[in-house]
Image 1 (cartoon, rainbow over the protein chains, first blue to last red):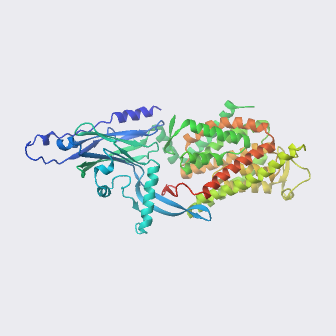
Image 2: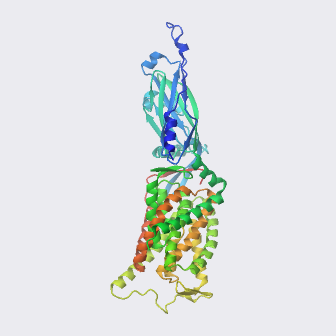
Image 3: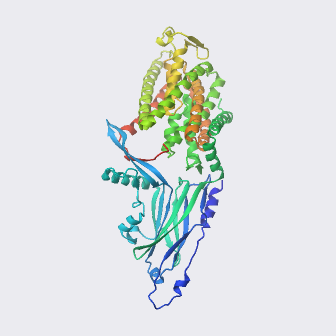
Length: 270
Length: 307
């Protein structure tokens, strides 16, 4: 095992791709500085291997502001929101209704391309960063991500109701989360974001996105990809189960027989 | 201590799984039921996806049944011939059940149907057994020696043709009801995703009048094959058997099964039947509550295409 420490090492080592911009500051000091801010994020590794000991982890993402206005930075009026978004999947939301006293799944609504997980970290509470409308436009935050119904021409109230239920279920299961204060500025330009990887994090390509706000206005966005996959043994078992399923099934049966036999020998009570 | 399950794709606690396996294995060895009807709901309750819980439960049941069957074999309380005939019927029944399973799944109400089937089957079986065994217990307490098999008292089953002798069960009976029983249980078990021990045990006791102690060994013997078949089918078609999860449960289960068989041997037939009846009824009530009580969440999510 020891996989946990490997992962930790990866994360702890999460380096940064620091692209500072000293050039901008060298420009004429008395003219009104025209800053064109940018944001960069870096992951030390673009793939994380999940091993037997994996029980969730905190992923640290480092990043920096480019061409930041030192005055604005001093006043703390730069805000950063970092999101780790899981791969998209079609999801069916079902609603139970009572029929003859029994609760039955009756109505359902399918959504295309719903991120499996959505872990967000921000410098401050969301309502303090910018207007609700900009979140909607950016499709940013567990309550604002655009969820696309598979049949959009249905009754809008029904769609709205099921969309709400989908967000609510995802948040309740911890797959959609917000971490206020999860982004911290280490210096004027450098920040560190901590997002949570759940124990049942989905295997696949995750996308880390960083959003920069200045004085409550959205400035720039940047993203990086993160591949989450199973490590050697787990991956081998998974492959075997899918590619040689009959052999895998026979092995499972054989293992059960051997375990039963050994158990009889070890624990026999007569 | 956590462990990551490669198929279920979730991290779980090893000790919880071992304890779960041991508890179910104990009951399995004691009553001769595979424990599928207990392990599957337990796993689902522990956040394992239902499809994986059903298939992996079947895999774990093989181990505890095999372990239990070995100890019954040694005591001579396993009727291979009866088990074999039941099994022959069972294979036919399971194959039919798999087709019906697919049909119900296409209709989209499989979960409800399975729950209703569980509640009805467990309710009937548990209720009848409880009434009978409590009566038997009361009679034996009143002083009358318990009469297991009244000679000369035969039901219609014993008048059917094609009789066969089952020596270990002290039984001389037509193969038609034995095959039929095997087929019916195979059918139900492939739909419900269980070995079918909880139906097999009372059916052998009450319908075929097999002595209780032989019933348990024979039922376990039959379950080994039924659940092996289920495991193979699930691995090949749904890729839902998690061998790591199954192994954790097995390790606990085989230990529990040996202790359970020992305790079961000390109890009298009617006590054993009363306890099994209570267990079966408890599961039925638990499932019925889920059907009738307003669920805490009216909405549920499922990944389209995977189910």
